[in-house]
Length: 259
Image (cartoon, rainbow, N blue to C red):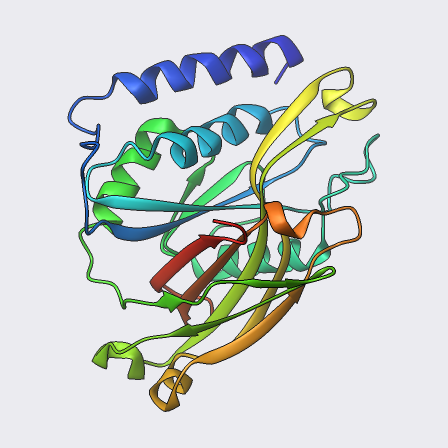
């Protein structure tokens, strides 16, 4: 996709997104169902800025009635040899995407790819599909996870997650992520060279911290290390439960490190 067309598409997609009927949430809405939206993206991909913009819009406006949208921007590393090294990229996210593609019967990994609650994948700049997928996911009962107030010690962020939900005995893994709510990069090479890219929910650390069934014995504590260039106090912690084998997301919770 040409550079000018790519950035024009971002505006067009968001216009479609905000014009879709019956999706605007009431300001006083409570008891929303958490929905995890993952975007596999790269600063080296000229088709990705519209998807990054869509992810940011979902995060900032929370426009889907009944849904608490929790976003994760996971930057893959397979674009890094094509004129620009994405400072947020990690092979870990490339492997996570590859596992999704195998389970969801996608021939090969691509960017931008959006995955909602681990079950519905589509091109990451497809706003209409994103709305449908999130609306559908918000109708599924979720395990209620409770996240303690994160504690910062230099570049380490610690917290614990708990649940009194009887469904927490399901066979699933617990993951914790440390996220930059917003990031910007002045790209000087590759397909996006000369452009300032805006990112949302950038995952800086992701690790499996236990099994869902562990919550039956009490809170599960964990620590995440922020990269040297990150500002932990400005970050966000996301914890989610996912069926073993990187299946459906059963519950998720998010909190700012500094409220």
